[in-house]
Amino acid sequence: MKKLLCSPTLLGLIVACLLTNTFFSTIVLGSADYSSYVGNVAETAGIRVNDEFQNQLALLQEPKESPESYFLEYLRKDTNGLSNLYETFEASSIAKSEIAAYGITGDVARLLEEKCEALQASVDAKAKSGEALDLYLAGFTTHEHNALVFIWRMFALEGALIGVLMVLLLIGYEQNNRTAALVFSLRKGRRLMSAKLLAAMAVGLASFVLVWFASMAIYLALHPYLIHIWHSSVSSAFHIVFDSFVFRPFLTWDSFSLFEYAFAQLGISIGIVLSVMLLGFFIGMLIKNNYLAFFIFLVTVMVLYILPPTLASIGQIEMSSYVINHNPVRLWWMQEYWFTEGTRQYLWPRFETIGVASSLLVLSLLALLGYRHFWRKDLA
Image 1 (cartoon, rainbow, N blue to C red):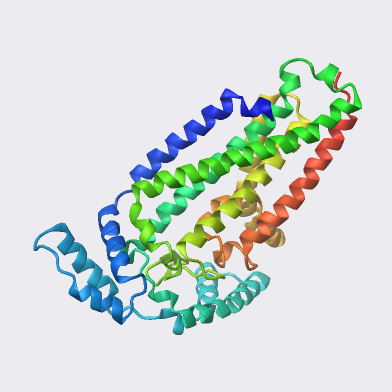
Image 2 (tube, rainbow, N blue to C red):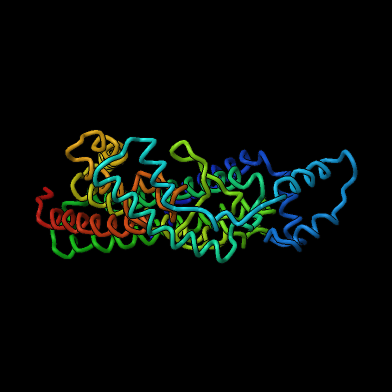
């Protein structure tokens, strides 16, 4: 582990990630002025758009022709007549729109309908709690939320790359220094490989968490208004997604404030980073050359990305595409839909949790097979 912690490669990667994240955090400031104003109003009037909020909003006065006066006017229009849309929302309408838009039939259509029927319980709970009336960032909620998810997706990508590079760097150390034949000629030497995996995973995971929290601190410093709406529900009526040619609310299985949602995102991202490191270890056990192993890893990632839609186009094995779609690469790509019903891409509830759990299980078995292959092979 000391080799990795003292590695200039690790330090360089962390610094590069922080600089990259700072850059992207800066360029998503398009609606910052209005969002900042909404955040300031939320600090005084609260995050629930009810009678008390409207009374507070009515008392606000801003200098005429000032930017704030326009922001106040927009906010009043945004919140005027806001209703608890979940009281009348039918989750089954999601499946119906997807089936109609894409001509879905058979078992896939049935499973989509069953999934959305199960989602109705979440809709009813949200109707009772009044989450739809949470302010979030009013009219710019969808834009700001998508920008935040884009940043989280960047963090996960960086964590996966750091993790894989740490794994390949450590397990290839003896090969790069031409001591592999000597070290691994003994059983004791070969047992080091499992310890190397654990050390690399610990360093890679710690690096990802460090980058995540440091980058989030930078993001919040550039977007301080998010602090005022941390406890707004991500399923606010202001948070709208466009799917299957229909606008609908961002509907999660469980109730999440933005604060809770951020940590839920971190949890699934950690699972994906660990899965990718196990994949890198498996490939590294089969291929001696680090550069070739990393190239094969990238090819594998591409295959995992394009395989599900390719299989979906083949009628007889269409169902297999929905199973393989739970791989860590596709999960990362679908990050904006984590904790929702997952659109027509997924047939079962809580796809992100199922995907991470199954990926960790399958890739752990592959890592074990790779280790056994390494234990038996001739390194001469």
